[in-house]
Length: 153
Image (cartoon, rainbow, N blue to C red):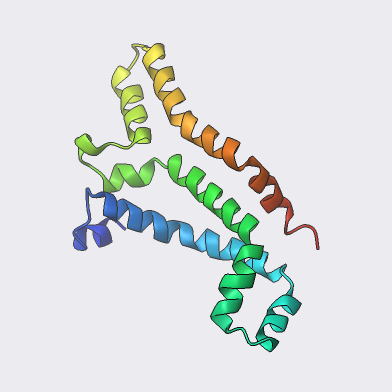
């Protein structure tokens, strides 16, 4: 993956990280949404096709609004996975001026050695936890409905 990003000229750029993260998370998203769409009612799609709706219309007007809990769940899972990622930014982003939050926290922990600056470390940990906590507080209802939507039919 490193050599592919390097050959594309995207090493040490945010575009390279975004491309890698998008392709890296796509497999889980497709797997999850395939199972989610199988639980959706096929009769609604067939009724829309009989009424004259196109296939794209069925997708955008019927299936995607019904799949909103699954899409929100995928978005949250991907956000949490990418936020806590350490190895990919370390390998693909070697420029110290462009550290991401997880790289900065790891750098603080490594450079301290046996000296402990717990106040700085816990301040950094708090800063890194706040966006995840905010996402959860905003979408906690969608998380619970997305997790249980495939179990009820």
